Length: 178
Length: 49
Image (cartoon, rainbow over all chains, first blue to last red; front, side, top):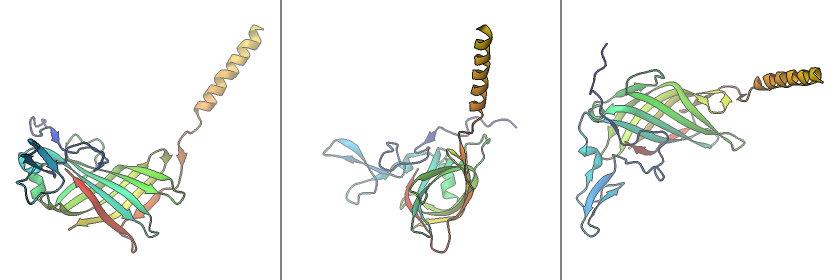
C-alpha cells in the first residue's frame, strides 16, 4: 500500500500530554479572538465576550487540517481521593469532529496520524503520586460542540507505571460536560 | 606483586558485573481502577484542541 502523500497537514493546536491550562503557552483552538480598538491588537480570550465581535480560532481552520483533542479529567475514587487523567485524541481532521461518534485506539507501532493516548496521575495513600502512561486502550467521543465546550465520551486503557514494574488498568471511564 | 594486582583487577571486574545486574526498577502488584465505581465521580476540568 502506497503512503498517501499530502493527506495530513501539519498538526495544529495542542498536541502533547499533559495539557496545562495555565502554563501551556500553546494555542488552544477553542479560544476566541477579537480586535481590541483601544489596545490596537488582536486579543485572545478563553470565552466568547458578548460585547465584542469574537471569532473562535477553530473556525479559521480548513476541514482537512489536522488537530488533537485534549481532555483533562479529575477522577474521585471511593475514598474521596482525587486523581488526574489526561486523554489525547490525536491526528484528527477537523471535519471528523462533526461526524460523531469518533473512536480511536492506542497503537504503539502505528504509522497513522490518528491515535489515542493517556496519562494518569494516581495519588497513593502515602501521599506519593504514581504516573501511568498508555500501553493499550481506546476512546470514543460521542458528543462534542466546540462552540460551547460540551463533550462526552468513554475510554479504557492500561498503562505502565513510570519508575516501577507495575501496570495499571483503568476501566469504565465515562465523562460528560454539559 | 603482578599476580596480586591482576587478582584485584579480576575481583573489581566481577563486582562491576554483579552490581550491573541489580534491578534498579522496583516491582509492585498491578492495579485495576474502576473509574465508574459506586462512589466514584469523573469530571471534565478542561479541554483543548
